[in-house]
Length: 252
Image (cartoon, rainbow, N blue to C red; front, top):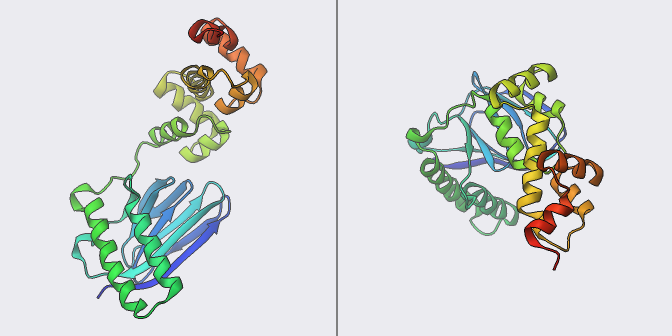
């Protein structure tokens, strides 16, 4: 029988840890922040728009890197297609899993006539969407290469405030160990990698907008000040941001 057991939205605090526990039903946890979880004996890393699928009686925990919302539901399901599909998975571009859960939330809150029957039908639909999205042949492997995960995180968030300490924590290494491994793997120090990404972003996107001030571009690119931006930009290109703008798009 398909049946909803619980459905909650919750806000996790930074570094909040949910100890190891189990449920009698399936649990699906939809994430809007970053962190890590252990499902069974395997550690996974999650990011926004990923979700954990946990089978009944499978032990799991969770730790958030920063304050973030979490959406989680528990359900019983007869669909054999999702049996044993434990892990972290990415939602598709249409956010199909998220949209399905929102439909369930709407039904749960409004409780129209026959809402329980409708929720059970929606649980069945959810299991089909899960099977289509991940399937037994497409089960994602746990993130073995933590440095690769951190690199993806840097590529997506380089224009935000990022500290090397926070990256080391995400990777699960000490500060010095992380810097050593990152440079060994990618050929540059992590901070230099961030500077390069920020400068390229300024060159290819922001400096083309004549209306943006250099100070605005500096902050939008992730630099702490326009002085730092101009210094790093000239070191990388040999010219100032203003000179680059004049050479590439002119002054008119």
